[in-house]
Structures are given as structure tokens and as C-alpha cells.
Image (cartoon, rainbow, N blue to C red):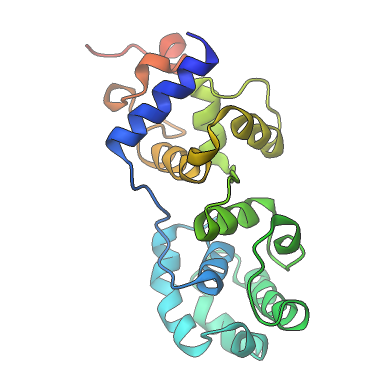
Length: 216
């Protein structure tokens, strides 16, 4: 099977079975999504969604968040992983939004990565979800699934994987492909004990064909 055929199978499968895949984070607008994605680093979306309603009620925009005290904000997100760093990042992010971007979330990766707590992965999520830009956020799930299926080869870093995926995926599907791959990695192609017998991508999967005895 050629790489082109492999990608075509993947797209056809998800267009049929998960055409409306989207982020599990609950948000209203770019600012809330940015806050939520920063909080979601090494934390579950479920935990973030339980935390953000009170946070957004007290700090609904960049101006209010930039004026937050460390202790008040920390108290709201202390159940999130790494609350000390994330408290600093959120206040710093909001402050820079006010000082450099008129309180609005910028919509380019180069601008977003200037913000405290925002790396390339987060910037790709924001621009692809809000603006449907053809950017690919590569996390551990996306990297694992892409490698196992054979979408990427010899990629040693998330950036290398990102470049390969963007090069091969049709542009109109890139903003959705992140959600397809991450959800598949969370619930089917898990790191340990992947559910290969339940996977609709078995026909193109290099991992299952080499390592797993699939029940027919």
C-alpha cells in the first residue's frame, strides 16, 4: 500500500465515522479556548472543563485575568496539574495580550508562541480550531497513532511529524485530522494495550500487522 493510499483510507474512514470531530474542551471564543488549552497540558480535558466555569466567571477576558492576583487564580486552578506554573503563565499571557495585542488573541502561530505558556502545539490548536487554518498540533497521541499507522516515517520530533503530516494531508482536512488522530489515540490506539480488534484502521496499520494477532 502506498502512502497516498494509506492517507486516503484514513480520510475516508474518519469522514464516514467521525465527520464532526472537534475538541472536547468547552469554550466560548478564542480567549477561553486559549486558557483551556494552556490548562490542558498534561491534564485531562474533563478536569479542565470542571475547572473553567468558575475561572471564566471571575476572569471573563484578558483584562480581568491580567489583573488577577496569583493567590486568587491559583485557588481556582489548584486541582489542575502544575498549578503554580500555569497560574504564572495565565497571568503573563493575559498581560501580554493587553500590552501587545489590544486584549485580543492573535491568529498566527508566530504571534501566539510569544505568549507565556504557549508553545507551537498550543498555537496550532488555537489557529486550527478557531480559524480552521491548516495547522497540525502534534501531541503524544497524534505522534503515536501516526507512527503506528505509517503516516509518518523516521520522525524524531513533533515538529518533524507535523511537517510530514501537513505535507501529505489534503489542506482542507488538516484542521480536522488533529482531532481524528488524538481521539483515536485516546480511546482506541492507546499507548498500552491498544484495542486493535475494535480498530477500523487495521487494514492500513503497520503496528497491528507486525505485532498483534487480530481476532477475525
